[in-house]
Amino acid sequence: MIAGSLVALVTPMLPDGAVDWEALNRLIDFHLAEGTHAIVAVGTSGESPTLSVDEHIQVIARTVDQVAGRIPVIAGTGANSTREAVYLTRLAKDKGADAALLVTPYYNKPTQEGLFQHYTKIADSVDIPQILYNVPGRTCCDLLPDTVDRLASHENIVGLKEATGDLERAREVIERCADRIAIYSGDDATAMKLILMGGKGDISVTANVAPKKMAEMCTAALAGNRELAEKINDQLDSLHNNLFLEANPIPVKWALNQMGLIDAGIRLPLTPLSQKHHEAVHLAMMRAGVI
Image 1: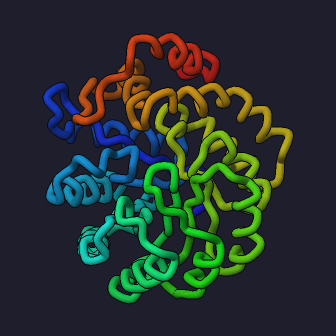
Image 2: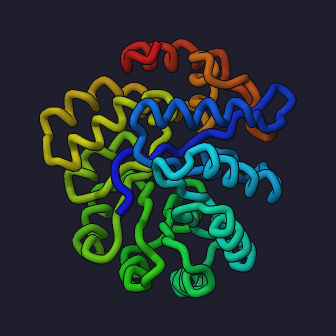
Protein backbone atom coordinates (compact mmCIF):
# COMPACT_ATOMS: atom_id res chain seq x y z
CA MET A 1 0.00 0.00 0.00
CA ILE A 2 1.26 3.47 -0.92
CA ALA A 3 1.36 5.61 2.24
CA GLY A 4 2.81 8.84 3.60
CA SER A 5 3.57 12.09 1.80
CA LEU A 6 2.57 11.83 -1.84
CA VAL A 7 3.59 15.03 -3.60
CA ALA A 8 1.18 16.42 -6.19
CA LEU A 9 4.10 17.48 -8.36
CA VAL A 10 4.00 20.69 -10.39
CA THR A 11 4.93 20.57 -14.06
CA PRO A 12 7.84 23.02 -14.42
CA MET A 13 7.64 25.33 -17.40
CA LEU A 14 9.79 27.89 -19.14
CA PRO A 15 8.59 31.51 -19.42
CA ASP A 16 7.02 30.74 -22.81
CA GLY A 17 4.98 27.90 -21.30
CA ALA A 18 7.00 25.02 -22.73
CA VAL A 19 7.53 22.09 -20.36
CA ASP A 20 10.99 22.33 -18.77
CA TRP A 21 12.15 18.72 -18.88
CA GLU A 22 15.48 19.38 -17.18
CA ALA A 23 13.74 21.09 -14.28
CA LEU A 24 11.33 18.14 -14.01
CA ASN A 25 14.27 15.81 -13.49
CA ARG A 26 15.74 18.16 -10.87
CA LEU A 27 12.44 18.32 -9.00
CA ILE A 28 12.16 14.54 -8.94
CA ASP A 29 15.71 14.20 -7.63
CA PHE A 30 14.92 16.84 -4.99
CA HIS A 31 11.98 14.77 -3.74
CA LEU A 32 13.95 11.55 -3.74
CA ALA A 33 16.65 13.22 -1.63
CA GLU A 34 14.14 14.82 0.76
CA GLY A 35 12.22 11.64 1.54
CA THR A 36 8.95 12.07 -0.34
CA HIS A 37 7.13 8.73 -0.30
CA ALA A 38 5.48 8.87 -3.76
CA ILE A 39 5.04 11.24 -6.69
CA VAL A 40 1.74 12.13 -8.34
CA ALA A 41 2.43 13.28 -11.89
CA VAL A 42 0.03 15.42 -13.92
CA GLY A 43 -2.61 16.00 -11.30
CA THR A 44 -4.21 19.38 -10.61
CA SER A 45 -0.88 20.79 -9.45
CA GLY A 46 0.70 19.49 -12.65
CA GLU A 47 -1.59 21.68 -14.78
CA SER A 48 -3.20 18.68 -16.45
CA PRO A 49 -6.03 20.78 -17.98
CA THR A 50 -3.61 22.68 -20.23
CA LEU A 51 -1.20 19.90 -21.21
CA SER A 52 -1.75 18.17 -24.51
CA VAL A 53 -2.27 14.41 -24.43
CA ASP A 54 1.25 13.91 -25.78
CA GLU A 55 2.71 16.17 -23.07
CA HIS A 56 0.58 14.47 -20.43
CA ILE A 57 1.90 11.03 -21.28
CA GLN A 58 5.45 12.32 -21.73
CA VAL A 59 5.47 13.81 -18.23
CA ILE A 60 4.32 10.47 -16.82
CA ALA A 61 6.91 8.53 -18.82
CA ARG A 62 9.78 10.85 -17.88
CA THR A 63 8.77 10.81 -14.23
CA VAL A 64 8.74 7.00 -14.22
CA ASP A 65 12.14 6.91 -15.91
CA GLN A 66 13.73 9.42 -13.55
CA VAL A 67 12.30 7.79 -10.42
CA ALA A 68 13.55 4.42 -11.66
CA GLY A 69 11.51 2.39 -9.22
CA ARG A 70 12.78 4.08 -6.08
CA ILE A 71 9.33 5.31 -4.99
CA PRO A 72 5.86 4.81 -6.50
CA VAL A 73 4.66 7.03 -9.34
CA ILE A 74 0.94 7.74 -9.51
CA ALA A 75 -0.33 9.13 -12.81
CA GLY A 76 -3.19 11.59 -13.02
CA THR A 77 -5.46 10.12 -15.70
CA GLY A 78 -8.91 11.44 -14.88
CA ALA A 79 -11.17 13.08 -17.45
CA ASN A 80 -14.77 14.13 -17.86
CA SER A 81 -15.05 11.62 -20.71
CA THR A 82 -14.98 8.01 -19.57
CA ARG A 83 -13.42 6.92 -22.86
CA GLU A 84 -10.65 9.49 -22.47
CA ALA A 85 -10.00 8.42 -18.88
CA VAL A 86 -9.70 4.78 -19.99
CA TYR A 87 -7.33 5.83 -22.79
CA LEU A 88 -5.09 7.90 -20.49
CA THR A 89 -5.08 5.22 -17.80
CA ARG A 90 -4.09 2.55 -20.31
CA LEU A 91 -1.23 4.73 -21.60
CA ALA A 92 -0.06 5.45 -18.03
CA LYS A 93 0.08 1.72 -17.35
CA ASP A 94 2.03 1.17 -20.55
CA LYS A 95 4.56 3.82 -19.47
CA GLY A 96 5.15 2.06 -16.16
CA ALA A 97 3.10 4.08 -13.66
CA ASP A 98 2.44 2.23 -10.40
CA ALA A 99 -1.10 3.57 -9.99
CA ALA A 100 -3.57 6.04 -11.47
CA LEU A 101 -5.37 8.97 -9.84
CA LEU A 102 -8.80 9.62 -11.34
CA VAL A 103 -10.59 12.88 -10.63
CA THR A 104 -14.38 12.86 -10.78
CA PRO A 105 -15.74 13.98 -14.16
CA TYR A 106 -15.89 17.77 -14.07
CA TYR A 107 -18.47 20.05 -15.76
CA ASN A 108 -20.75 17.16 -16.86
CA LYS A 109 -22.25 16.87 -13.34
CA PRO A 110 -23.02 13.12 -13.48
CA THR A 111 -25.34 11.38 -11.04
CA GLN A 112 -23.98 9.03 -8.38
CA GLU A 113 -24.95 6.12 -10.64
CA GLY A 114 -23.04 7.78 -13.46
CA LEU A 115 -19.98 8.07 -11.22
CA PHE A 116 -20.29 4.43 -10.21
CA GLN A 117 -20.46 3.30 -13.82
CA HIS A 118 -17.65 5.69 -14.87
CA TYR A 119 -15.19 4.34 -12.31
CA THR A 120 -16.30 0.74 -12.78
CA LYS A 121 -15.71 1.01 -16.53
CA ILE A 122 -12.16 2.32 -16.02
CA ALA A 123 -11.38 -0.29 -13.38
CA ASP A 124 -12.75 -3.06 -15.60
CA SER A 125 -10.80 -1.79 -18.61
CA VAL A 126 -7.30 -1.24 -17.19
CA ASP A 127 -5.56 -3.57 -14.74
CA ILE A 128 -3.70 -0.98 -12.67
CA PRO A 129 -4.29 0.18 -9.07
CA GLN A 130 -6.67 3.16 -9.18
CA ILE A 131 -7.27 5.95 -6.67
CA LEU A 132 -10.56 7.84 -6.83
CA TYR A 133 -10.25 11.62 -6.45
CA ASN A 134 -13.05 13.70 -4.97
CA VAL A 135 -12.63 17.49 -5.12
CA PRO A 136 -16.10 19.02 -5.52
CA GLY A 137 -14.81 22.56 -5.03
CA ARG A 138 -13.19 22.26 -8.45
CA THR A 139 -15.40 19.78 -10.28
CA CYS A 140 -18.95 20.63 -9.12
CA CYS A 141 -19.28 16.87 -8.66
CA ASP A 142 -19.30 15.19 -5.25
CA LEU A 143 -18.43 11.50 -4.93
CA LEU A 144 -20.57 10.53 -1.93
CA PRO A 145 -19.63 7.92 0.69
CA ASP A 146 -22.36 5.53 -0.47
CA THR A 147 -20.84 5.48 -3.96
CA VAL A 148 -17.30 5.10 -2.63
CA ASP A 149 -18.56 2.16 -0.57
CA ARG A 150 -19.98 0.54 -3.71
CA LEU A 151 -16.74 1.05 -5.63
CA ALA A 152 -14.39 -0.04 -2.85
CA SER A 153 -14.95 -3.72 -3.52
CA HIS A 154 -13.48 -3.57 -7.03
CA GLU A 155 -10.07 -5.22 -7.03
CA ASN A 156 -8.47 -2.43 -9.10
CA ILE A 157 -9.80 0.41 -6.92
CA VAL A 158 -7.32 0.79 -4.09
CA GLY A 159 -7.79 4.30 -2.69
CA LEU A 160 -9.66 7.57 -2.40
CA LYS A 161 -8.20 11.07 -2.36
CA GLU A 162 -10.76 12.98 -0.29
CA ALA A 163 -10.15 16.68 -0.89
CA THR A 164 -13.25 18.20 0.67
CA GLY A 165 -11.46 19.10 3.91
CA ASP A 166 -14.53 17.76 5.72
CA LEU A 167 -13.20 15.54 8.50
CA GLU A 168 -16.61 14.13 9.35
CA ARG A 169 -16.94 13.01 5.73
CA ALA A 170 -13.45 11.51 5.93
CA ARG A 171 -14.31 9.71 9.17
CA GLU A 172 -17.40 8.16 7.59
CA VAL A 173 -15.47 6.93 4.56
CA ILE A 174 -12.67 5.54 6.75
CA GLU A 175 -15.16 3.70 8.96
CA ARG A 176 -16.98 2.23 5.98
CA CYS A 177 -14.16 1.53 3.53
CA ALA A 178 -10.70 1.52 5.18
CA ASP A 179 -10.65 -2.28 5.30
CA ARG A 180 -10.77 -2.33 1.49
CA ILE A 181 -9.14 0.89 0.22
CA ALA A 182 -6.68 3.50 1.47
CA ILE A 183 -8.08 6.92 2.29
CA TYR A 184 -5.77 9.86 1.52
CA SER A 185 -6.20 13.51 2.33
CA GLY A 186 -6.27 15.96 -0.54
CA ASP A 187 -6.42 18.95 1.79
CA ASP A 188 -3.11 19.87 3.43
CA ALA A 189 -4.70 21.94 6.20
CA THR A 190 -6.59 18.91 7.58
CA ALA A 191 -4.29 16.11 6.42
CA MET A 192 -2.63 15.44 9.76
CA LYS A 193 -5.99 14.95 11.48
CA LEU A 194 -7.24 12.68 8.71
CA ILE A 195 -4.15 10.46 8.98
CA LEU A 196 -4.49 10.26 12.76
CA MET A 197 -8.10 9.14 12.18
CA GLY A 198 -6.91 6.22 10.07
CA GLY A 199 -6.01 7.73 6.71
CA LYS A 200 -2.92 6.48 4.88
CA GLY A 201 -1.34 9.74 3.78
CA ASP A 202 -1.64 13.09 2.05
CA ILE A 203 -1.58 13.84 -1.67
CA SER A 204 0.02 17.17 -0.99
CA VAL A 205 0.64 20.57 -2.54
CA THR A 206 2.72 21.70 0.45
CA ALA A 207 5.10 18.78 -0.15
CA ASN A 208 6.31 20.53 -3.31
CA VAL A 209 7.88 23.23 -1.14
CA ALA A 210 8.61 21.42 2.14
CA PRO A 211 8.99 17.75 1.19
CA LYS A 212 11.15 16.65 4.11
CA LYS A 213 8.88 18.10 6.78
CA MET A 214 5.75 16.79 5.07
CA ALA A 215 7.28 13.32 4.94
CA GLU A 216 8.24 13.55 8.61
CA MET A 217 4.80 14.79 9.62
CA CYS A 218 3.01 12.04 7.71
CA THR A 219 5.34 9.39 9.13
CA ALA A 220 4.68 10.60 12.68
CA ALA A 221 0.92 10.70 12.13
CA LEU A 222 0.91 7.21 10.59
CA ALA A 223 2.76 5.95 13.66
CA GLY A 224 0.15 7.56 15.92
CA ASN A 225 2.66 10.06 17.33
CA ARG A 226 0.27 12.97 17.64
CA GLU A 227 2.65 15.19 19.59
CA LEU A 228 5.40 15.06 16.99
CA ALA A 229 2.97 15.31 14.08
CA GLU A 230 1.41 18.42 15.59
CA LYS A 231 4.80 19.98 16.26
CA ILE A 232 5.88 19.60 12.63
CA ASN A 233 2.47 20.56 11.26
CA ASP A 234 2.50 23.81 13.24
CA GLN A 235 5.55 24.87 11.21
CA LEU A 236 3.73 24.06 7.97
CA ASP A 237 0.33 25.49 8.79
CA SER A 238 0.92 28.84 7.10
CA LEU A 239 2.07 27.09 3.94
CA HIS A 240 -1.01 24.87 3.95
CA ASN A 241 -3.18 27.98 3.84
CA ASN A 242 -1.14 30.50 1.87
CA LEU A 243 -0.39 28.14 -1.00
CA PHE A 244 -4.08 28.50 -1.81
CA LEU A 245 -4.36 32.30 -1.78
CA GLU A 246 -4.91 31.95 -5.52
CA ALA A 247 -5.82 28.85 -7.50
CA ASN A 248 -3.37 25.99 -7.18
CA PRO A 249 -0.69 25.75 -8.61
CA ILE A 250 -0.21 29.53 -8.91
CA PRO A 251 1.23 30.13 -5.40
CA VAL A 252 3.25 26.90 -5.22
CA LYS A 253 4.91 27.60 -8.57
CA TRP A 254 5.86 31.07 -7.35
CA ALA A 255 7.30 29.57 -4.18
CA LEU A 256 9.35 27.00 -6.08
CA ASN A 257 10.65 29.75 -8.34
CA GLN A 258 11.73 31.71 -5.27
CA MET A 259 13.60 28.60 -4.09
CA GLY A 260 15.44 28.45 -7.42
CA LEU A 261 13.95 25.07 -8.30
CA ILE A 262 11.89 26.04 -11.36
CA ASP A 263 11.50 28.87 -13.85
CA ALA A 264 8.50 31.19 -13.71
CA GLY A 265 6.45 29.53 -16.46
CA ILE A 266 2.74 28.86 -16.06
CA ARG A 267 0.08 28.39 -18.72
CA LEU A 268 -2.95 30.53 -19.40
CA PRO A 269 -5.60 30.84 -18.20
CA LEU A 270 -3.49 30.68 -15.02
CA THR A 271 -1.28 33.70 -14.41
CA PRO A 272 1.68 34.36 -12.07
CA LEU A 273 0.96 35.02 -8.39
CA SER A 274 -0.39 38.52 -7.74
CA GLN A 275 2.10 40.90 -6.17
CA LYS A 276 -0.23 41.46 -3.22
CA HIS A 277 0.25 37.83 -2.11
CA HIS A 278 4.05 37.65 -2.40
CA GLU A 279 4.75 38.67 1.18
CA ALA A 280 2.29 36.23 2.72
CA VAL A 281 3.68 33.26 0.79
CA HIS A 282 7.25 34.39 1.48
CA LEU A 283 6.58 34.61 5.23
CA ALA A 284 4.96 31.16 5.20
CA MET A 285 8.07 29.76 3.51
CA MET A 286 10.26 31.37 6.15
CA ARG A 287 8.16 29.96 8.96
CA ALA A 288 8.44 26.50 7.41
CA GLY A 289 12.22 26.91 7.18
CA VAL A 290 12.47 26.37 3.44
CA ILE A 291 14.13 29.73 2.78
